[in-house]
Image: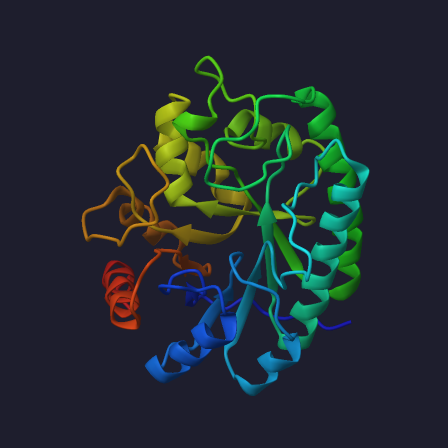
Length: 288
């Protein structure tokens, strides 16, 4: 069993580039631009993973990767057993790929109380399952994944959900698990950091804290001890827009305390020059 060391590097998600559906084309552009540290992201079409062999990046893998031939929305707390089974299988495939490409960390999404047809859009309001049932199903799925990841020597981390206005029901979060610290705290009464960490998305935190009316700085402080990696992008504080960073945005102000962890850029619709400008902003604040 091989254990790979997490490096304190800045990574770029393959979701950052404009028109990122073809991941091989994205990687070719990153290679030309001299981008070396890459998170394989969640918005790509199916491809032959053997093609990854022609690149020499430092990799991390995130959520819906490698993409399956037949698309579906990953949901470890789904009411449907076949979706839970497919979700676990996809994650196991991702962990296997981590071993092949020397990715020390695999990160994945928190669950939902419905099966959303598409992320980033309003979720259906029918067939919402009881939150406690969804939570327990997630934990059951997670326990299988923890055992598998430990056996393979790969670290894993959960990304807390973002809650936007269009997914509130009467002003409340009924659809997304692990969006506030109370539910994360409940999870860590069952599991430990040794089992699974957090991928703290600072863009998500900015948005969710507004709609659920909690202190975003306090949320970061409470999560800190369990954080394995950071996702960073900018927004207006109300929508998960994945905009470019600025030197004075709230997300940037939180980075120094996570300097020793992988920091993953997830700004979208970028050119490679735009990506480099965002990386430079991160470098400046970290004094690299």
